[in-house]
Amino acid sequence: MTELGPPGTAGSALALQTAAGFLLTGVTILLVGLLSETDARGWQLAFTLLAVGPFLGIVAMGRLRGRPEASRMANGRR
Image 1: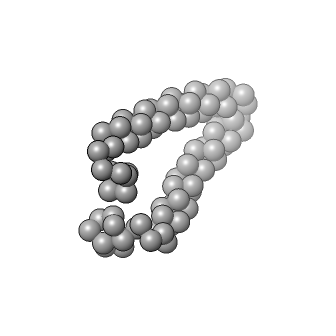
Image 2: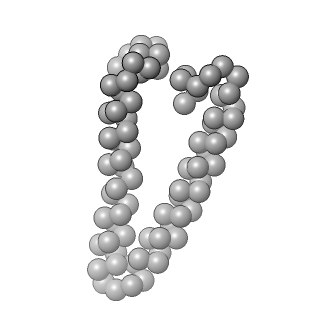
Image 3: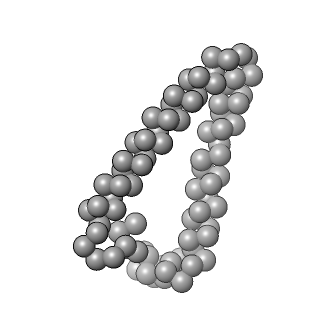
C-alpha cells in the first residue's frame, strides 16, 4: 500500500487500510454469529462464507502481481 501510493500519502493510506480492516472484521464477526444461530447448517454456511475472504485475497494478489506496478513493490522481487 505504501509502496504504490503517491508520496506523502502513506500515513493516510495505512489509516484507511486499518479502518477498513477493523470494519470488515466487525461485520464478519456479526454475520458469523447470526448465521450460526439459525440451525445446524448455520455453522456450515458461516464457515463457507469465511472461506470467501482468503480466496478473494489470493485472486487480488495474483492480479496485482501481473500489473506493471508490481515491479516497484518488494524491491522488484516477484
